[in-house]
Every structure is written in C-alpha cells, then in structure tokens.
Image 1 (cartoon, rainbow over the protein chains, first blue to last red):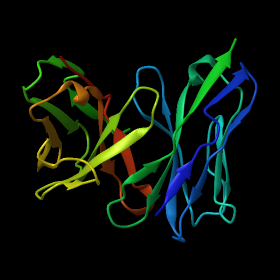
Image 2 (cartoon, each protein chain N blue to C red; image 1 turned 90 degrees about the horizontal axis):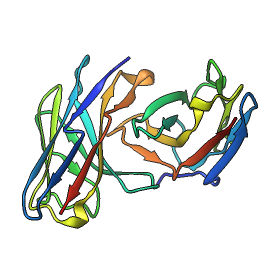
Image 3 (cartoon, rainbow over the protein chains, first blue to last red; image 1 turned 180 degrees about the vertical axis):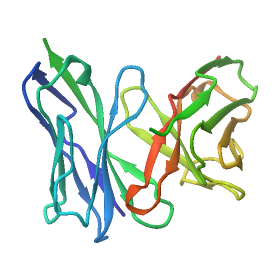
Length: 115
Length: 117
C-alpha cells in the first residue's frame, strides 16, 4: 500500500526568506502523480504544484518549486520569497495514474510566516 | 481554473436528523468525485469515491448506510449523513476530478462544517 509521510508538523520562515517542506512516500508503482496542496485558515484546499513521476524535470510555479528525487521517493516543496499569505497547512499527496485516482495525503505541515 | 462549490457551508442539526451536502463542479464535468472528512488539525480522510451513474466506493471503516452518496449527474454529487449524531460533527470536503492523463487533478470544494447537537 502506498503511504505519504510529512515529518515536519510545523515550520516557520521569515518573510522574504526561503523554506523547504519535506515529503516522502512509499510505492511500488513506477508511474504516479505527486501534488502539494495548500489549506489556508479558510480551509479551502488549493493546488500549489503537481509533478508527474515520469518527468525528471522538477516542476515550478512562480515562487514554488519542487525537488523530486524518484529513487529516494522524496518530494520536497521550496517556497521562495515567502509572503504572509503563504501561511497555511501544506499537504503532500500521491495518486496512481490509473484506477480510482484517489489521493493519499500526508499529515500536513503548518507553515508560519513571520513578519 | 476549475471551480467546485459545496452547499451548505455550515449546518447545525439535532441528533437523529439527516443532513444533505451538495457538491457541484461549476465549469467542468466530473465523472468522479470524492468525499473527505477532516478533523481539527488533522489531514483529510477519504470517505468514498463517487462515480456518476454507479454506486459509490466506500473506504474501509466508513458506513455506507450512514453516509449515503448519490452522483446523479456529471456536475453534482450529494452526501447525506443519516440519523446524525454528535460524533458525526466534522468538516466535510468534496473534490471533483478534472483532466485526463497527466493533467488529471482533483479540485476541492470549500467544505461544509457540520455540528450535530
């Protein structure tokens, strides 16, 4: 069975600085999708970034980028130039590329941004 | 981007009553929708996968007779909490699957807060 682990319950970053959130997963599949979702206090889940496992190139979305290490089964999220609006819960998620496409979520990392 | 709505956003009900929560994909058709439950400061727990025109698939430990799911159209799935009890109080979130292949992504509704008195 697939599992997703986020070992950092809480992280803090100074405004304008860079922070990296960790995520590891376990799977026997060779192809899959990985996601980072943000859940602000409103509790609306927002897609931050996605990565297809068959792509070696790390995904980037403006200030957000990932470090995808397939062999190590690691998928970390880097937030550059952190802003106060980045404060939220961040969830890492895994999905197979076939079948039900259901997500397996990690336990989340609460990110605090200090002014 | 794809938008998913949920209604109501919050509901308070008496113990023993039933509550229906609607999940709609507003600008796309979703053959598959998902229902999650989230406890305070915890992650999302998948309850069931809702497929248009067929029976929902429930996760282990989720009572299908307690949480009735109907996916009657490509844009609407409903979750009915039957004979609600205080332990059913929680935050319920739906998502709808959009895209094909490498573009497949789940888009989430804003959630429904249920309080059972």
